[in-house]
Every structure is written in C-alpha cells, then in structure tokens.
Image (tube, rainbow, N blue to C red; front, side):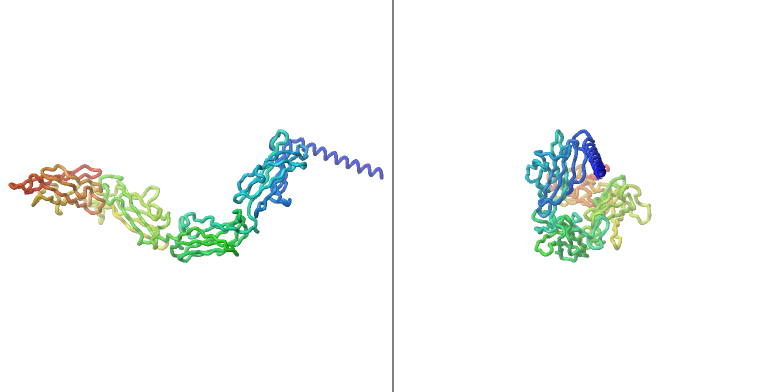
Length: 506
C-alpha cells in the first residue's frame, strides 16, 4: 500500500512540474511591449488584450451581473475592466480610462475614469446616448511603462417591451416623392413608392416587433400593398403604394397598433402618364437661317410632350429627328431625351439643299424636319420647316420686283408710308436678323423703318418706310420738289445691297 501511495504522489508531482513549465513558457514568450495580441473572448462581446507586461479584459453585464452587450429600454450596462500583471495577478489601484466610439452611448461617471480594486477590477456605467446602433468601448491602463487597451462591442436600442412614445416618418423612395400613372412605367420611371416609418421610445430609440397600421389620404384611387407591417430591429416599418390610373396626390398615415400614436408621410404625387399626340408640340428657334450660302449655321428644333392630363412626360423619354436637307442631331445622339417633358436638337445647314430643278416635289430652300417618339400604344410624330435663306435680297413694291428707281408721290407734307417686301431668289424670306436701314437721304427724313430687321418667319417679310418731305421746302408753292432716299439691306453673313428711290412732294 505504501508503495502504491508513493507512486501516485510521484505522478502528481510530475504533472505539477509540467504545468509550471508550461505556465512559465507562456509568460516568457513574445517580446517588446506595447499593445500586441488579442486573447480569448471574455463575454458580452468583449476580448482580453495581453502584452508581455500584463493584460486588460472588459466584461459587459447588466446591473445584476448577467453578461449582456445591449443597452435597451433605458437599462444601462456595466463595463468591468480586469487589469493583471505579466504573471496574471490582479493589480490594485491602477487608473483605468474608459471611452466609447459613438454618441449613441455615454459613460457614467462622465469623466470616464475608475480605479481598480483588490481584484484588479475597475467598473464604469454605460448608458444610452442619442440614437441607436453599434459602438465600441475601450479601457486603457498603464502597466509598467506600457499602455494596455481592452475593447468590447455593444449595441444601443429599445427593448421590445419598451413603450412607444412616437412614430416618425423617415423617408420615401423615389426621393423626389413622385411616381407615374399606372401603365406609364419605363426607363427611369416607377409606379411604386416605398415609405418608411419608425416607432421610437422616449429616448428616440427604435422599438422592434411593433405592429403598425397604414391608411391613405387621396382624391383618386391608389393601391396600398400592405395595410400593416411589423417593425424590425431598428424600429422601422415599411408601407408600399402602387399608383392608379389618374394623377393625384397621396399621403400615408401610420398608426402604432392599439394606440393613438400616428404620423403622416410627406405628400406623394402620382403623375406623368404616357405622351399623347395632342400634347406633342414642336417649334423652331430661328425659322429662317443663313443656310443657303453657308454651312454649319444652326438653329434648335424644340419638342415638348405631355400626358393626357397635361403633365410633362417622365425624364428620359427618347425623341428621334430626321431631315431631308441639312443635318439634325449629333453623332452621339440622333435626337434627344426629355427633361421635364422637353428637349431639343441642333439643325445645321449643309448639303443636300433642294433648289429649283432638284428632286420633284421638294420646295427650294426649305428643309423638312420630322420628329417622332413613342408611347405604350402608338407612335407620335410631327414635322417643322426650316428655311435655308439665301443672302442676296430681292425687293418688291406692290408685288413687282425692283432694283430701285421707283418714284413715289406725296400729296401733302405728311409722311408717306412706302411698303416693301423682301425675299431671297427662292422666294423665301431673307435670313432672320437681316438689317433694313435708311441711307443717303436728300430733302426727306425717315424716322424709322418698321421692322428694322427681318424677323424669324417662313414668309417674305414686309417693311414700312415713313418718308417725310423736307418741311422747309414742302408746301411753299411753286414747282414740285423731289427728294431721294435709299434702303440698305444687309444679311447677317452677307454684304449690303442699296436700293435708291425718289419722292415727289408739293
């Protein structure tokens, strides 16, 4: 028996010696100092940080000492930092500095410092701050000459059993709070809106697992996809709206089930249907350009589109342009895409130019630009004319072309209104901006020619010239007097042409 006892004793001593050697080896390995290496999990989302000089480990619990890493329903956490030396022994009277990475939590006391007790433990209260989410708490202690840091993560939220204090409207998608009429969906357009509400407690923390009821306010029919929803971990609940067949505005009312707590969303608009032919509108910025004698003279072709309710069609609606003379659009885009229901493309002068003797049925000097787009059911189309005006003027008096020399007669000394018509050699108007000015006046005055420039027009322009006899000679009896006046016509890109006329007056 004595022999057996001594054998057992030798085995126990041997195991103890092995354990001591392992312990010494673990203590002496590593090197340097500073914060290196992370030990095993301590609990409550915490980790122990160890250096050759010692370690700091944070444990998170509730006020009863139960491991926990969530602040909810106003219940705080307790952070316990255990400080040990290199031999794993607790260190007493070490100052530990606590800090958190987010304002969603605050420390108590606010100084964030605590002194370790005989067990090497320093405690700090962690309370809810502003908002909800995740954060990290750290504890820093000086062991020897090194700063050692321990860290732990936690979250802040409301308890599922917390009492709702309010429900707030959070956001809407699309962000512009506008959806299109049913059946008008397409590129960049949606018929569905998603509205988010949030149930919160008195600390403004989201409360999970709360039923929320939804109703709508609208003058036209819309579809509420879900009449109820349950809040998620962040306290948010989502309502989904589908548009109807008529334009309208709609707001969603969200109410916490079993309470009178409610909130109303921002106004959502239901608009922008498919384009209709009756609202397909075309215009030309400058109707008559200096395009017969010059290349690359430009004007804009504008298109406006609306739906049956008169609302601009959705952004991104494509429009296609074609022309039988000159060129339209760009190399990147043959037409344009709408913004707020409208867009434009540049027309420029170049060959082909249809003139006298060209393709049968083509009017000389006139480009026809065809514009088209599509709706869900049909193709919308229209056309506009652009005049490729020539520079050389042709002047007409009473429908008869003249190069000047016409004699006009005034019956008295009041101004005589002389009317002239200006065309190019194709019978089209001269280029817009062509100046019409009085020149070389003798024994007459001209206050102003109206209009003084050829306007944007698709018809030959008419101009009134008030020619007034010299008042020092007119009406003095004797022979008839003759005055002289000139009209100078100057296109924007051409040279001037002078027409000279005479005025006989008493």
